[in-house]
Amino acid sequence: MVEIVGLAGSLRRGSFNRFLLRAACELAPDGTRIEAASIGEIPLYDGDLEAEQGLPPAVAALKERIAGAAGLLLVTPEYNNSLPGAFKNAIDWLSRPPQDLPRVFGGLPVGVIGATPGAGGTALAQVAWLPVLRTLGTSPWFGGRLQVSAAHRLFAADGSLTDEETRARLRRYLDGFAAFVAARGSQSGA
Picture 1 (cartoon, rainbow, N blue to C red):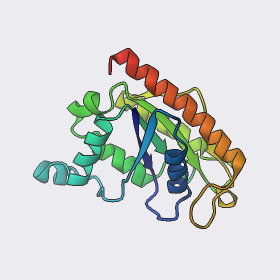
Picture 2 (picture 1 turned 90 degrees about the horizontal axis):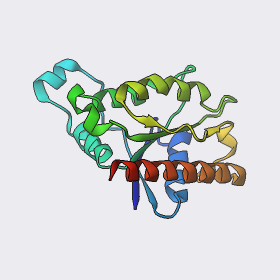
Picture 3 (picture 1 turned 30 degrees about the vertical axis):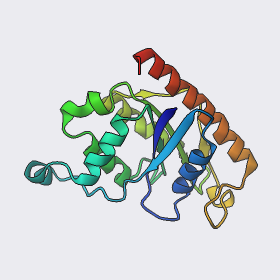
Picture 4 (picture 1 turned 90 degrees about the vertical axis):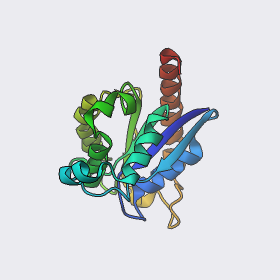
């Protein structure tokens, strides 16, 4: 079983990106499990806090989940034409201490998708993640894109993804990403 950790980059309960992650968990291809994790308990990064107390428990637990996974799926909102501060803050915590980068992120297959009510479909946020992913030493998947526009029309009040075309696009994306993750795992001997 290929294990992928999925992170939605919004703290809002009714976030379209949380809904998209939930749909990704439901539509994961056979032989793949996407497990949703949360950034909700991660505090603002503070170097003094880190020096005095070490990593907060929520950060340490999420780091271990990611380090033990075969892949990572980032489900990103787009705020002011870029990535969300809370999401970047979580990744900043997860990158501490720097000597842990190879263990947690080194060569880790990462996919980036997102949903927005706007017309841009999180394209700018997805591009803004690239230098971060490069710095972390990940292996981003460039074999597919999923940028969901007009998200307010595609999800029901309960958060379920009701638009069949978007569901089909998400399935295709996940099929490709899961195959990439599996291939990277077999190359590394995992």
